[in-house]
Image (spheres, rainbow, N blue to C red):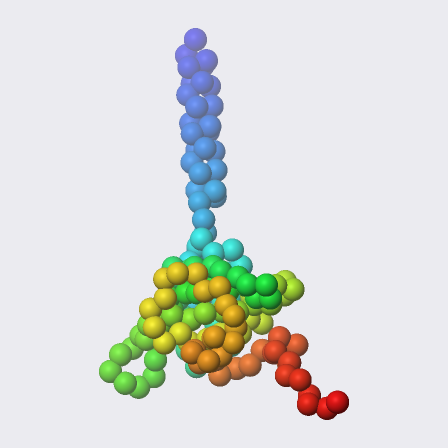
Length: 156
Protein backbone atom coordinates (compact mmCIF):
# COMPACT_ATOMS: atom_id res chain seq x y z
CA UNK A 1 0.00 0.00 0.00
CA UNK A 2 2.83 2.33 0.85
CA UNK A 3 4.44 1.85 -2.55
CA UNK A 4 1.19 2.90 -4.27
CA UNK A 5 1.07 6.13 -2.24
CA UNK A 6 4.72 6.77 -3.12
CA UNK A 7 4.07 6.30 -6.87
CA UNK A 8 0.93 8.45 -6.82
CA UNK A 9 2.81 11.23 -5.04
CA UNK A 10 5.70 10.96 -7.52
CA UNK A 11 3.37 11.11 -10.55
CA UNK A 12 1.54 14.12 -9.04
CA UNK A 13 4.84 15.92 -8.48
CA UNK A 14 5.94 15.27 -12.08
CA UNK A 15 2.62 16.53 -13.48
CA UNK A 16 2.77 19.73 -11.42
CA UNK A 17 6.35 20.32 -12.56
CA UNK A 18 5.44 19.80 -16.23
CA UNK A 19 2.44 22.14 -15.92
CA UNK A 20 4.64 24.92 -14.44
CA UNK A 21 7.16 24.54 -17.27
CA UNK A 22 4.37 24.69 -19.88
CA UNK A 23 3.02 27.89 -18.33
CA UNK A 24 6.51 29.45 -18.25
CA UNK A 25 7.20 28.59 -21.90
CA UNK A 26 3.82 29.96 -23.01
CA UNK A 27 4.57 33.39 -21.51
CA UNK A 28 5.86 36.00 -23.98
CA UNK A 29 9.62 36.04 -24.09
CA UNK A 30 11.55 39.30 -24.27
CA UNK A 31 13.72 39.69 -27.34
CA UNK A 32 16.99 40.70 -25.78
CA UNK A 33 20.50 40.67 -27.16
CA UNK A 34 22.99 42.04 -24.66
CA UNK A 35 21.90 45.60 -24.03
CA UNK A 36 19.34 45.63 -26.88
CA UNK A 37 15.72 44.77 -26.14
CA UNK A 38 12.25 44.87 -27.70
CA UNK A 39 8.87 44.75 -25.97
CA UNK A 40 8.02 41.02 -25.68
CA UNK A 41 4.54 41.62 -27.15
CA UNK A 42 5.99 42.68 -30.51
CA UNK A 43 6.32 39.90 -33.09
CA UNK A 44 9.41 40.48 -35.23
CA UNK A 45 11.69 41.62 -32.43
CA UNK A 46 15.05 40.44 -33.83
CA UNK A 47 14.47 42.08 -37.22
CA UNK A 48 13.33 45.41 -35.76
CA UNK A 49 16.36 45.40 -33.46
CA UNK A 50 18.53 45.11 -36.58
CA UNK A 51 16.85 48.25 -37.99
CA UNK A 52 17.28 50.09 -34.67
CA UNK A 53 20.99 49.20 -34.50
CA UNK A 54 21.41 50.40 -38.09
CA UNK A 55 19.64 53.67 -37.24
CA UNK A 56 21.84 54.34 -34.22
CA UNK A 57 25.09 52.42 -34.75
CA UNK A 58 26.94 54.31 -32.00
CA UNK A 59 24.49 53.16 -29.30
CA UNK A 60 25.55 50.34 -27.02
CA UNK A 61 22.04 50.10 -25.53
CA UNK A 62 18.66 50.43 -27.23
CA UNK A 63 15.31 49.56 -25.65
CA UNK A 64 12.14 49.52 -27.77
CA UNK A 65 8.95 49.58 -25.70
CA UNK A 66 5.22 50.33 -25.94
CA UNK A 67 4.73 49.36 -29.61
CA UNK A 68 1.80 50.84 -31.53
CA UNK A 69 1.10 49.45 -35.02
CA UNK A 70 -0.51 51.09 -38.03
CA UNK A 71 -0.51 50.78 -41.82
CA UNK A 72 -1.53 52.35 -45.10
CA UNK A 73 -1.80 50.86 -48.58
CA UNK A 74 1.98 50.59 -49.03
CA UNK A 75 3.64 50.52 -45.59
CA UNK A 76 3.35 48.91 -42.17
CA UNK A 77 4.33 51.22 -39.31
CA UNK A 78 5.56 50.44 -35.81
CA UNK A 79 5.90 53.28 -33.32
CA UNK A 80 8.08 52.63 -30.26
CA UNK A 81 9.12 54.59 -27.21
CA UNK A 82 12.89 54.26 -27.48
CA UNK A 83 15.55 54.58 -24.84
CA UNK A 84 19.14 54.60 -26.07
CA UNK A 85 22.47 55.54 -24.58
CA UNK A 86 24.06 58.84 -25.49
CA UNK A 87 27.61 60.08 -25.61
CA UNK A 88 28.19 63.51 -24.13
CA UNK A 89 25.59 65.82 -22.69
CA UNK A 90 24.17 65.58 -19.20
CA UNK A 91 22.04 62.45 -19.78
CA UNK A 92 23.26 58.92 -20.23
CA UNK A 93 19.98 57.71 -21.76
CA UNK A 94 17.94 59.57 -24.34
CA UNK A 95 14.21 58.86 -24.79
CA UNK A 96 12.24 59.57 -27.99
CA UNK A 97 9.58 58.07 -30.20
CA UNK A 98 10.79 56.29 -33.32
CA UNK A 99 8.54 55.23 -36.17
CA UNK A 100 9.64 52.28 -38.30
CA UNK A 101 8.20 52.14 -41.85
CA UNK A 102 8.35 48.75 -43.61
CA UNK A 103 7.08 48.07 -47.11
CA UNK A 104 4.25 45.57 -46.93
CA UNK A 105 6.16 43.38 -49.41
CA UNK A 106 9.17 43.09 -47.04
CA UNK A 107 9.40 39.84 -45.14
CA UNK A 108 10.59 41.47 -41.89
CA UNK A 109 11.50 44.79 -40.26
CA UNK A 110 15.29 44.63 -40.70
CA UNK A 111 15.35 47.02 -43.68
CA UNK A 112 12.64 49.35 -42.37
CA UNK A 113 13.16 53.08 -42.63
CA UNK A 114 13.51 54.60 -39.17
CA UNK A 115 12.30 58.08 -38.27
CA UNK A 116 12.86 60.08 -35.12
CA UNK A 117 9.45 61.54 -34.27
CA UNK A 118 9.58 65.04 -32.73
CA UNK A 119 6.59 64.67 -30.40
CA UNK A 120 4.83 62.24 -28.14
CA UNK A 121 2.85 59.82 -30.23
CA UNK A 122 0.28 57.44 -28.83
CA UNK A 123 -2.17 56.79 -31.69
CA UNK A 124 -1.15 54.39 -34.48
CA UNK A 125 0.69 56.14 -37.28
CA UNK A 126 -1.23 55.36 -40.47
CA UNK A 127 0.80 57.26 -43.03
CA UNK A 128 1.54 58.46 -45.49
CA UNK A 129 5.31 58.01 -45.37
CA UNK A 130 5.66 61.51 -46.89
CA UNK A 131 4.40 62.89 -43.57
CA UNK A 132 7.28 61.12 -41.82
CA UNK A 133 9.72 62.55 -44.35
CA UNK A 134 8.35 66.05 -43.76
CA UNK A 135 7.74 66.09 -40.00
CA UNK A 136 10.21 63.48 -38.76
CA UNK A 137 13.92 63.00 -39.24
CA UNK A 138 15.13 59.85 -40.95
CA UNK A 139 17.90 58.37 -38.90
CA UNK A 140 21.42 58.24 -40.37
CA UNK A 141 21.76 54.94 -42.15
CA UNK A 142 19.60 54.51 -45.24
CA UNK A 143 18.22 51.06 -46.04
CA UNK A 144 18.79 49.57 -49.46
CA UNK A 145 17.60 51.63 -52.39
CA UNK A 146 14.73 49.27 -53.26
CA UNK A 147 12.86 50.60 -50.22
CA UNK A 148 13.31 54.25 -51.12
CA UNK A 149 10.43 55.97 -52.89
CA UNK A 150 11.26 56.60 -56.49
CA UNK A 151 10.88 60.08 -57.95
CA UNK A 152 9.85 60.61 -61.56
CA UNK A 153 12.92 61.03 -63.75
CA UNK A 154 11.54 64.09 -65.54
CA UNK A 155 12.44 62.61 -68.90
CA UNK A 156 9.67 62.33 -71.39
